[in-house]
Every structure is written in structure tokens, then in C-alpha cells.
Length: 150
Image (tube, rainbow, N blue to C red):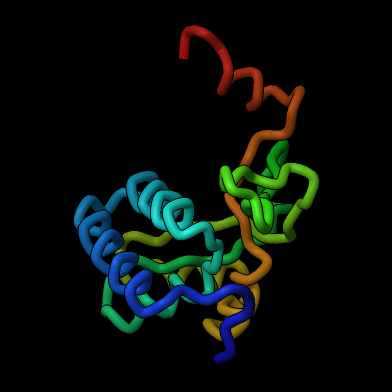
């Protein structure tokens, strides 16, 4: 399988593997997601295909699944702006897939891919067009996320 986009160095890959091994112990998708964001921000690279390969090579039971954004109302999928020194998300560049993180090993990931109707190879290809979920401005979910009492 070919990895698209800017690649991580060996040193960066080792650091990513270490962080995600630690984060995977939580079995919490939010914790893992934050770990992914943290390492990508540190290295100023967004490459979910390569992160998925690092997870597989290290036999870490975390799986990255590219799910069509059409399944989530009032949200968009976005990735960091290329070349952004602050690693800010590009809210203008909407992606077709959002990142779903499986934390309960391969069966959960296989079930999710079957639900979405894709193979592992299809999923791997889609990861290059996958971003994080953000609430669309002016939607109920955006208002709830920004409510003072939350």
C-alpha cells in the first residue's frame, strides 16, 4: 500500500509509536485522538495513512477508520492547513471522511469497516482524505459545544 502525503522520519515514527502505545492503554478514543493531534502538531505533519501503518507494525490494537462525513449531521471533517506554522485546521477545505478511532482491537475495526462497506485497503486509501470532526458554525451542536454550562 502506498502512503500519500508528507512522510514522518524514522525518529518521528518512533516517537509516534511510543506516544500511541502509551495512549492506547487508556482504551479511550478521545485520549488516542488527542495523542494523534499532539504528535502531528509537534512534527507539523498530518498523515493518517502513515500513523495507521505505525499502529499495525507495532501491533497496537488501535485502528483508524475513514467514515463518510455524510453519516454525521451538522459536522465537517477538516485537516490542518498545509504549511501552517500554528498547525491550524483548514475550515474551508472540507474532506469527505472523518476519523473514527477503534480502541478495542481488530474485531471492532472489522465490524466498523463492514458497517461502512469498505475493505482494509479501501480504508487505507481513504485515510489520505480524512480529517477530524468539527461542528458547523451556527448548528445546534456548535451552540451546545460552546454553551457556558457545558
